[in-house]
Amino acid sequence: MTLVGYAVAALFILVGFYVIFSKKLAIESKEMRNILGIVAIGYGVFRSVIIYQKSKHRNEEDES
Image (cartoon, rainbow, N blue to C red; front, side, top):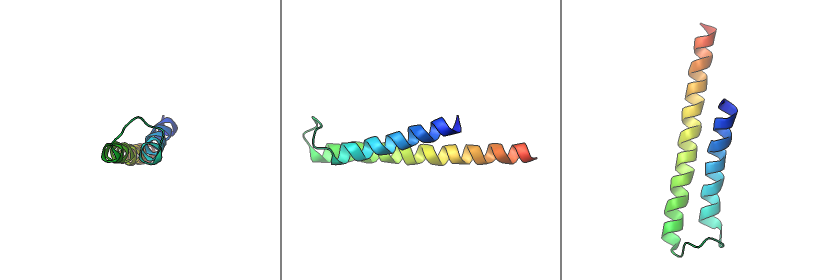
């Protein structure tokens, strides 16, 4: 499950960059694209940190 979690987090980060830099989206306002992209990137980073912490905690419990 850890690998799937990291993949989803990476997908959110990639989607965030796509939203910011893509010219093909129907969102007219550059500000709205930036906000949506930054939120997606932030959520992806947040998910990856949470997954890392849970994985580290699980490994510490297995060692004890």
